[in-house]
Image (cartoon, rainbow, N blue to C red; front, side, top):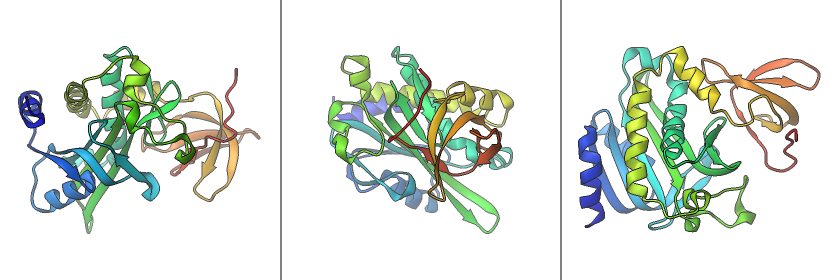
Amino acid sequence: MTNSDRLSSILNPLGLGAWRYLPVVTSTNDLAIQWADEGAPDWSLVLADEQTAGRGRGGRVWFTTPGSALAMSLVLRLELPETMVVERFTALAALGLVHALDALGLEAEIKWPNDILLMNKKVGGVLVEADWQDDTLMSLVVGVGVNITPDAVPPAESLRYPATSVASAAGAAVDRWSLLGDILRHMQHLRTYITTDAFMQEWNQHLAFRGEWVWFRHSTGLVEKVRLLGVTSDGQLSIEKENGEGENVVAGEIVMNGAFRDS
């Protein structure tokens, strides 16, 4: 059975707006953005086997080698209430992966704002790009990359944060197309209550390092030790500094070097 035939059997029952599978692309997000401009309906999916110039947060490159990973992007058309919580759509994809991995017996967590961890190592990432025309949100493109096999993990010296693959964590081969279907099903369900407090409770429940002290790099470049308190309703990270002062941050990252965790 070809990839396209297998994908048809998995994706068609989901009732997506449309989907396209390509063996090789530069970036699934770029293709999805173009498709959105052409009128792609809600839940339109771009999927690739190999990605040569994928993008991560902060303009970082995300390569996808053939047969080793999931590289996909969704075009979403938001209802008015959803436009009030755009910041939650990164977590929509991240939680979709968390729940799909849970079905494999793997306990994943979300490293704010957009990484998914297994055993404290990055296994996937999310990149959301919005198309605004004046004050109107025309579409969101939600890109997701997941390391399925060890071949998808870059050399350690090139990583900003330790990484792993689903197969490595599971100790067995994983069917990436079945995992894809599970991710999308969970995302569809999660979206039905994305505007509610229950969604935020779920995000915080799966927040990596919650309640722990870590080294955090602010958008200014300042690195300091902070305690992660949780995610606010608008997607900001609530932290406590060593002097007891609290702050909500809109950008930054937990850093690998010098990371501190209570034993």
